[in-house]
Length: 178
Image (cartoon, rainbow, N blue to C red; front, top):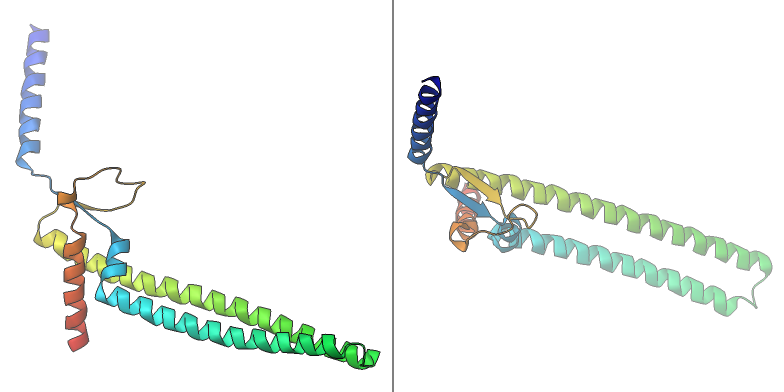
């Protein structure tokens, strides 16, 4: 009798809890944030700005490198004709300029990496706002970030990346008007 009562209670529990789960519709979507960054208007603008800055820095470094090469060539050509003291002085100057160039190159590289990281973080924060709004509007239970380590397979029907791009572009235009 106790076994039968226990089985009946277990069956009723399963029936009622499965009914609750069925009543709550689960809606899942995913977003490729990298694609949003690369294809959104603001992301494209950011990439162009970064590319322009990188080109400017490369040009400046290239000019400094040419200066160094010219100084080295001068030392090599005049090497035999120069007095040892003068040659040593030019070599010290070359070594100092080389060290300055290397320090400048490292400084630029660090600055650019920091700027890129900050800009990407700002973009991601803005994109997350858009995703949250879409999630609330469309009543998604969960929105995942598309990443091979996280989502191994998902039907393309639940990919809302293009929707996020459109909403993000719209939000950016509205902010620009203000």
